[in-house]
Image (cartoon, rainbow, N blue to C red; front, side, top):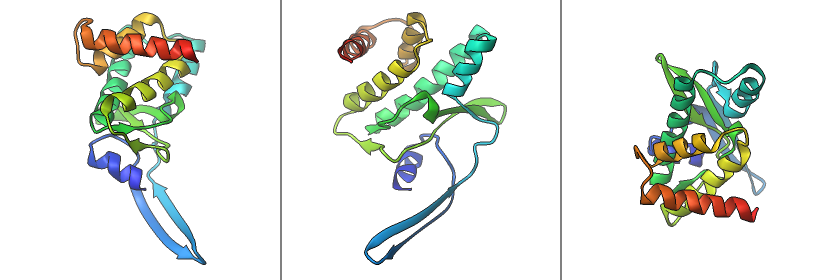
Length: 170
C-alpha cells in the first residue's frame, strides 16, 4: 500500500486502490488491499508471447509501446524509485481515453534509492534480460525514448555500455 501511494504521489501509473485496512492481532500485522482490476490490459509478457506467435504489431504501435514504457520508467527513476522486479509480467498495457496506457504492478519490493542511476540500471537491466525477443535496434530505441534523445548522445551511450556490461556479467 505504501509503495502504491509513493508511486501515485510521483505520478507513476499503477493500480488504483479501492480499499486498504490494517490491524494488529497478537503482535502480527494483517492487512487487506483491494485494487481496481486492470480490465482490458495485458502484461507486456503476454503481449510479447502473443506477438511472437501471431506477428508483431505494425511498427508505429510497437514504437509507441516502447516509448510509453520508457516514459513510465523515466518518471519512476526521476524520483529515485527502483521497482526491483521490473519484469515484462509486471508492466501492463491497455487503453485509457483512447490512448495507450502503461501501468506497473507488483510493487512490494519497490524502494527509494540514494541515486537515480542505481535505480535506473537495476530496473533496465532486469527488463532488458527478460525481453529476449527484442532486437538491438529496439533496445536502442527504448533507451533513446527513456533519455528523451533523438539520437545517440553521451548519456545514452553510457547507459548502453553499462547495461551491456551488466548483461555480460550475468
